[in-house]
Amino acid sequence: MTDKSSHFKVHSFTCVDLFCGAGGLTEGFRKAGFTSALAVDVDEQAVQTFRHNHPSTVCLHRNIQSLSGKEILQAAGLIPGSVDVLCGGPPCQGYSLAGLRIADDPKNHLFLDFIRLTSELEPRVVLFENVEGIKSMQGGNVVNALFREFERIGYCCEARILDAANYGVPQHRPRFILLAVPKGCTAISFPQATHGTLNQQLHLFNETPLPYVTAWEALCDLPLIDAGEGAEELLHSGNYYNLYQREHRGSRSPGMIFNHRAIKHCDRVQARYAQIPEGGDNQLLPVELRTKKRNVWKLNREKPSRTVTCNHRTDILHPILSRGTTVREAARLQSFDDDYRFFGNLTRKAKWLTQDDQVGNAVAPLLARALALHIKSVLAQEALKVQAELVKQTCNQNCNI
Image 1 (spheres, rainbow, N blue to C red):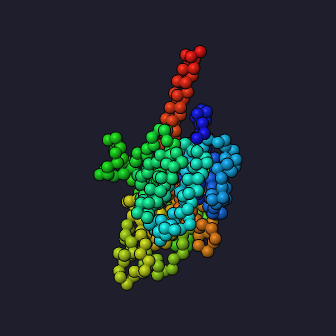
Image 2: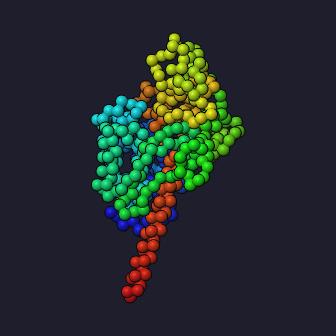
Image 3: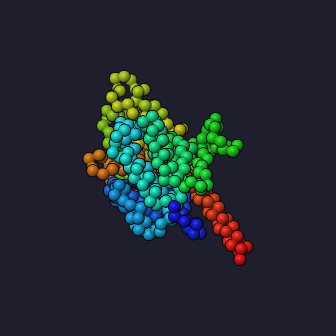
């Protein structure tokens, strides 16, 4: 592998984001102090969203199957061996618990391209993120193959299921996280959870966890709009009622919120939604009001949301209004700042990803930030290890003179 000792003199760590989508992973790494050197995605609208929110990052509108490590380095202005973190989550349609779990989905072959680019770029840390369901895909063979392929190219791996709610995200969102480092480097570990309930075994070194951030703590300051109301750009009152809201105002467009448009439901649908109790689903409705659609759930103001999906505008209901959540509300539940703007249509008639898709597919930035800060500490330890070895070699050379 490339000699990386000289690069550790650089204090700013770099990351490359494959399958970047709207940029949740990159946003978290940016907030942790990383330099985002390059991102890639095949979807035109997701790339537009990413470029708007990360204007200093080179973002390629490409399929990674046609992309080489050499091209990535050239486009990002990097030298071989200078990528600190390679991260990404290949599309999960083939094995998501929310989908059809099609074992031969062509998108699953993108795993191999992720491995190939890891081999070509030789990053110091790899972050592979995906749905929880990947663990049971094909009886666990998918995860076994991932470990085997990383080991084949010289990396050792560890994987866990992390719930975004345990890192301050107002949403229970279990994700499969695999971290890999070159063999012989500092052993990889995972960030300690910071939020939870007192009866959880969070192993916080006897520290009391912070309480979960609830859905209402995330949403209660946003303008209350009815079904069919709202706009792509709205003024915000500027008031906040808790730390979470204050920290997610953003600084690029003060006083503005974006993507706060509510879907227009007919009166019959709104009447049905009104009868679903907080924290309940449509199976709690009287039999005569139920429909074939089962996956409709109303937020509980006192708890984190369930997992935000690409269908949140019809599947996750506002706790006090008879409508689905807006893109901005879903983005708040995902821990995006208010000035993080999403582009694209709100319907699936378009060829490219909708705003809903982009939010639902994203890695929650606060979870990404927790991972990035932890990875930074691992990289710093490795830097000290390399520097100590260099000092030792210098001393030995001087002694031999």
